[in-house]
Image (cartoon, rainbow, N blue to C red; front, side, top):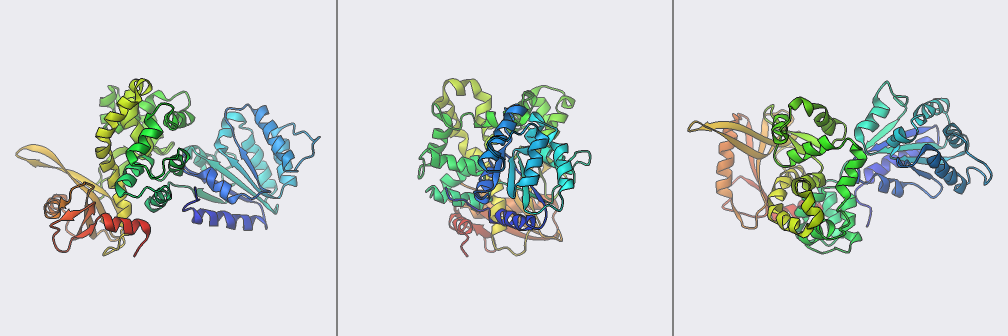
Amino acid sequence: MRFIDRERELEVLRKARERSRKKLYTLAIYGLRRVGKTRLLREFLGEKDIYFFVNREKGSTGLLREYENILREKGVITKRERIESWDDFFEVLFERFEGVVAFDEFQDFRFVEPSVYPTLQRLIDENEERKNLLLIFTGSTIGMIEKLFRDSKEPLYGRIKREIHLKPLDIRGSYEMARELDIVKLDDFFKVHSVFGGFPRYWVAIEDEGLEGRSAEEILRELFFEEYAPLAEEVPKMLSLEFGKRSGVYYDILEAIANGATSISGIAGYLNRDETSLTRQLRELVYYFRLVDYDRAVLGKRSILHISHPLIAFWFRFVQPKLSMYEFERRKVWEEVKKGLGDYMGKRFDFACRELVLLEELPFRPATIGRHWGYYREDGVKKVYEIDVVALDETGKRAIFGECKWRNRAQNGKKLVEELRKNVELTGWKGEAHYLLIGKSFKHVPEGVKVIDEDRIRELLEGSE
């Protein structure tokens, strides 16, 4: 598939190569697994550059032999020369090689050979004026990569000149991939996007399996719910790389969040455990692994937990709770998934709407965007109100309030706006207010209310004026 929407990152890499011609340059690329770090390297690296994958399943000696062979193939060492230690390996690189050297999954040296980190510290310091060498380090465990380069106690603290935090493709990039795959209907796009988000590897799987032009239901069934489905082990494999052998509590927390527990007290209740037994793991899921995040109320201090990775959210919502059935009778699980897919997509559609709002022409440029919710009492009963999209300007005095509804039938705009205005009143908002509807189609829309319907969504995704 054509390489999509990474021009800014490629430009940073090109400039880094130019700067390395004058003196040693070091750069880190980090991001979640399957976000496209290796593909970005493939697009950037030239024939004479060197790529090393840090395979955590290999022992130190085995990985060193592999790297030695790569140096030999690249002509850095002769056929008879041997690399006896990691110190020798890096000294040869710094003394003889000119070009770009990339170490993919660099954080995994902590499993294979942690002594690499102080060795690199020494050689980077000694070769600061060394010309024609660009070192690139990539990593998937974001918290670990940040610790390696930002923690003052670590050997490589302060040794990186530029960082690229590679994030999932935005909604336009995802739509561009969908068009490459002949996914024409927005219904199908939003369903697939609710599961794959902006992670290129999963969109590429559609092409790999010859599913171009097929419906969202066919795509998801073939990739996850058929016998020998290619992505059946994707989430367990990905999480085993992150969590290792200590995965149990992390899995429990993810399942609880995916099934509606949005606070630590809710998770503890779902799992019938004490909150204190979950605090460390929840914190790591948020700040170290970056798989869970807080969705904060724009006009207040409340926040709720959600799984930020769409495929993991999908897996723990539908598959993990029924893993035995999934292993034995996948098609039966698929029948249940189909029933709940619309509701799941609706919740993920709210996140997509925030991106769509930022693409639209509005009375002001939003400085903050998210959702809002709160509580009120009616006849003595505590109830919840929700506003799908709230966008504020930089002064915090102008707001856009939006309702997101993706339904096959045209929605009654008048009723939706009336309900939206009531909810805004409950927030106590006193500033300037604008109203917005986002969805497939609407009827009876009040004057002055902006609508982003199916046709407009397509224009925004295609970049049309």
